[in-house]
Image (cartoon, rainbow, N blue to C red; front, side, top):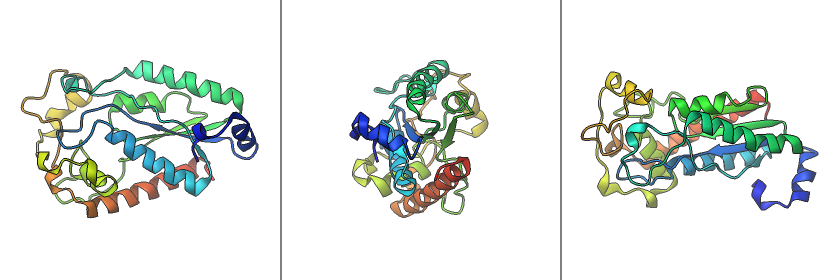
Length: 233
């Protein structure tokens, strides 16, 4: 159920029985030459739809912008805000909904930037819970990688499962620098472009729709368990 598709009277009536809200948080971020900039948005919204169907909790309109790596500034179309601005903007939005009676918020992100996640986790821990959707063990599914990276075997597999028509298969290119070299970029300490990078970190050529189906099933399972633990119906 989508909050934006209801009238204000229908939302007020819904609040009498459920004061919780799911808020997908996306990014406008390059995902290599083979995935669209709204990849994180699409995945977060799919999980939000599943959780809403399972729990009866409304889904708020997606926030389509987040915090991206400074080294990605040169990839056309990518844009970012700061950790502080994201935290403040989301906090101001949630404050309005709190005044109207919403009491518990579940923020869903399919974007692993540590500054992005920190902004979501530190808004108001008493009423806001945030989940990074790719943060679980998928080693039994992956062939080339030990875990999710960026526009990689894992993320590309999920997109092949959910939105195969949006994946530019002929543009896939494997690229990876060692994690110890990548860490300063991940921490936003190094801001220059990574030499030779097409945008992804990992092995998208090893992706498949079959792997994506398994990863997405695990993603939904862990998201539902997380929500139930936090208080969702």
